Image (tube, rainbow, N blue to C red; front, side, top):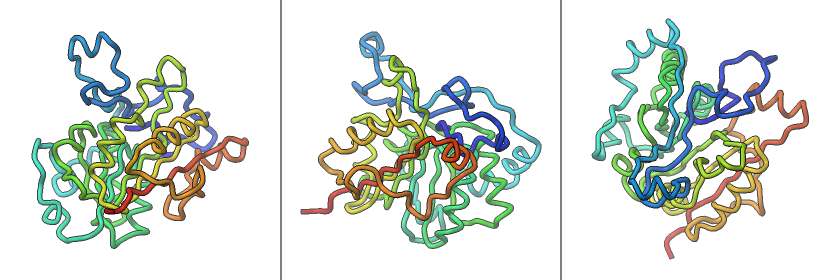
Length: 268
């Protein structure tokens, strides 16, 4: 799960999380050779670096019921091979990947708004998977599939190059302490992997409520030679991304939210 104050499931009057320790889980670092985030000791000893940090969380009765009832249909088991996604979704449609959907409220709302698109959500946090499955059942959504696994391995092994129409990364864990910035998800080599899976002219949409992370995102995305910004700097929030309760509360308190929408350059 990515840090997402918006999908935390906490009441409106609860204080927003302020550190990674407050979050159930998060997609943070990249299991890529020489990936930013690896210390010299990591590189020397070839220590595996994952795209997430797992933290304990309790699965509610409703979430467990949804996992049992809807998991067999909507959860795609990880395997180091590319599935027939047309067969998995039962149709040929534009396909959007979301990395770290939290408790799934935003994912479900976007999928309901865009019934002609298919959405593949990656989330390692089981309560979040159960929560999204519960929403899928309640809303009779058919255009969502879920993989409960490390995003890097999914991208490397299950997603073909030039196959995605979009990628969503909303409110990733900000790792706000300077010494932890290397753990942030948006790093050059991870972005290069993402971009390799996008079709030409497909989009990458990131959002954060931490200005320092927004600045880093803008720098990293802007430096990728295959990406072009759809705005001069930060983009207006696209209509399809709902304003969630923590975001609304933060805006009332004067906190900022930054959206970045980049597109992969088309074939020359």
